[in-house]
Image (cartoon, rainbow, N blue to C red; front, side):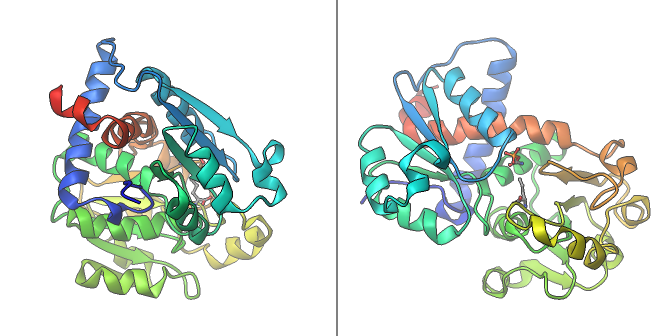
Length: 307
Ligand code: CP
Ligand code: NVA
């Protein structure tokens, strides 16, 4: 089926991603000026959430409304998603009724299978393996604060999880160097690392990974679905906290990002996340603007080109 999906950052070309970030910045400006822009009138986005969400749900729902369309929240508790209807069937049915489908789920293979059977674009709103929408917001935030990220050094400290994997793909597409410090046994997927070649360096010690960094990023130690591992992970990750000592290793004007929700006192100290280098509130807000650019790209590319 000749439909564009956004399941990982590799689904778009580097050029498309750069254009999308520029467009997000423009749509943000327009929104702040209070100028109406409704290219998605009568378009409907279905939002399937098999895991909790605050930012993703609110940003997609607000974004669709601001673009003149409508968003529909679907939870497995009260749809047939939770009762075992085959994904292939749900994809074919839903995609005949709506214009795009956003999914937050567990196994990445599930969203791939769903997309294979969908007649409309499918957007990955987080799987166990990737969180590409968050990276659009993170890249927009960097571009707003510092300009192009090409050639910069980013340090990802913590779990080699969905956020880490998406940072690896971003390093490829936006051409920055990525230092990763994760404890043994919690390193990112080896195939994803290898595919990124020499853009990625793995470090045992977080302070070494942070040396010379322009941006420091972390994420929770236990992701959604890993709640039972929380105590064990607190021990394993104790040395992988982003704190003042770690931030002192970076370049003087380094920024700090976190996709949120954050656990102060675990992966990051309050001093850092609430401090002068942190841009987490811009980063969270940019979920709205970046995803509006994504929705426009997938559903009304002619409107963007004419604007
Ligand atoms: N960062 C992020 O995706 O937040 P939510 O889980 O609140 O959507
Ligand atoms: N790694 C986290 C990100 C939350 C936005 C999780 O998957 O729970």
